[in-house]
Amino acid sequence: MSERALGVTVGVPFDVDFVAPGADYEWQLTVRPAGIELISRIFRQFSDAASGDTVLQLFHLRAALPGLHELYFVLKRRSDVAVVQNEIVVIEAAAPGSA
Image 1: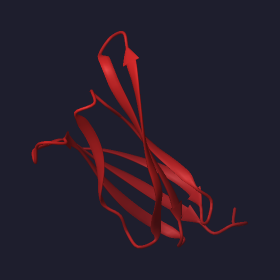
Image 2: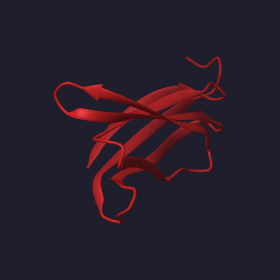
Image 3: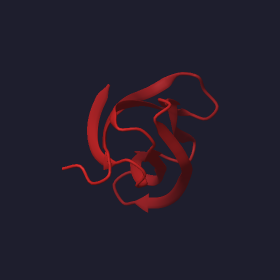
Image 4: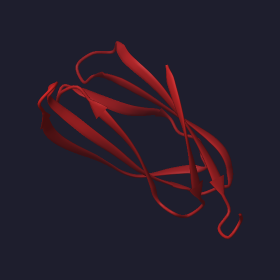
């Protein structure tokens, strides 16, 4: 399991992005606290010389409440229940105008 952190401002949209190894794989947001809103999820397929076809997934989100929020993502094949990879993204949301 890996973890990363992002600092954001409440009310300002932000993106969390992932690369998936091919069109049959996708990242899923499995745990989203009430203080974080999912605006949209975008898939972009591209070819990478080293790994072949890959998919870039963007989760477009917005913090509705200040504080620390943990988002849990899993990578898996669409047709399978087995999880290939887990990632936690810790969001530190600050109120607008706070330093």
